Amino acid sequence: MKPAPFGYADPTSVDEALDVLTAEGEGAKVLAGGQSLLPLLSMRLAAPTTLVDINRVPGLDQISVGRDGVRVGALVRHAQLLASTEAAGVQPLLCRATANVAHPAIRNRGTTVGSIAHADPSGEMTAVLALTDGSVTVATPDGRETIGWGDFFLGPLETSVHGPAVVLDVFFPALPERSGTAFAEISRRKGDYAVCGAGVVVTLDADRRVSSARAAYLSVGLVPEVHDLTDAVVGQPVDSADWAAAGELARGKVDPDGDLHASADYRRLLVATLTARTLADAGAEAARRTA
Amino acid sequence: MTEVCTERAISVVVNGVPREATVPVRWLLSDALRHGFGLTGTHVGCEHGVCGACTVLVDGQPTRSCLVLAVQVDGREVTTVEGLSRSDHQGGQVLHPIQEAFRECHALQCGFCTPGFLTTIAAGLDARDPSVEITEEEVDDMVGGNLCRCTGYANIKKACRHAAATMRDSAGAKSATLAPDSQEAGR
Image (cartoon, rainbow over all chains, first blue to last red; front, side):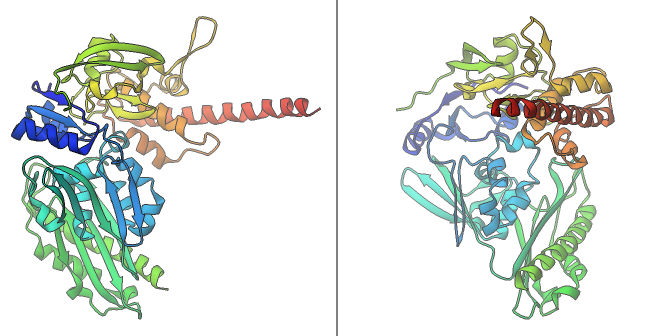
């Protein structure tokens, strides 16, 4: 359980990091929090020739909160985002989802951007990025580029970014007015990888009737999936909306694989249950924010 | 151009003592603590971040020492289980309340997982307001990231509550002794 030998560089600017990544070629890998990468190295599932540690690059550890959303820098730890009441005020899903990311000791070190760049479909923050319709800013030797989440995630642990690149930050748009959110997941031990998880956003009209219900799931597909469940509940008063019907709609839309931890059918059942449960909570919150 | 290296000299304060070592860059922090500095109190279980046995404090924050490279703690402060107790100024050692509580509550059997529990819980207890009663949720959160295959966790959780109560009592005692002193000073 030891990593294969590699070279190590800890540049102090993004440009230097890109220089090293360019010089070292395809075998080079960016290291941020390392809470997903180092296990892969120790289990020898990955064997990069060079690790480019960006922890000494200044300025990447900032959370900037504006009215339009929250921008999270590449070195912001999960624990830092979890503790940001300012970020939670603009997009409550950030704090709700981060609380489900692994254990406190992992959250102290792991970065939110790193988990998104890692593109694990069982990651909480990949789902939140998708649900909020967020984007990723990437620095390459050719300049900076902003990529929408849908173009960023290609498959499990695979993104559209190839060649020398550093993900600088991710942007989570603000929660719209008259909306509420919720996040829940089922795992075998609290903090472990979720067998299934759901994040939802419910938006009401001025008469407190449901105008939109959307959900994102983790551990049910190869990439984060967002499903529009509005059809099941559109126009219904929030206090008596048929959230279970929305759960059933979601169950029909997902196509999970079975594995050691859960069969595909069990995952579909969890999708239905978690969807109904979280939508009810999000609806109640949306109602409070509409009152 | 930033240099790519395969070993690196690091200086790190471990349990209050400045230490220096030249480490291969592929060494994990747990390797450096055990093989570089001879601090074998940090136990290595799964080596991929699941079991929590190797948890140490980096700048006071619980961190898996198997998920950090030794080169990455250059310039930082690390506390291992060996550093949880403090000197009593008479050549002896005073255990951290959670260490006392583990002994009191029989919170260990084989002891392999114990260092990781102690560092994680000690940091959690030290960070909270001792005058507030500890909740079950807080206790679950403190122990939830570490695996123990002997105890079934019941006695570990009991030790958390015991240590929290001890810390509440001593915080209360401190403020009680402080009060007359401050009156004294006011005269």
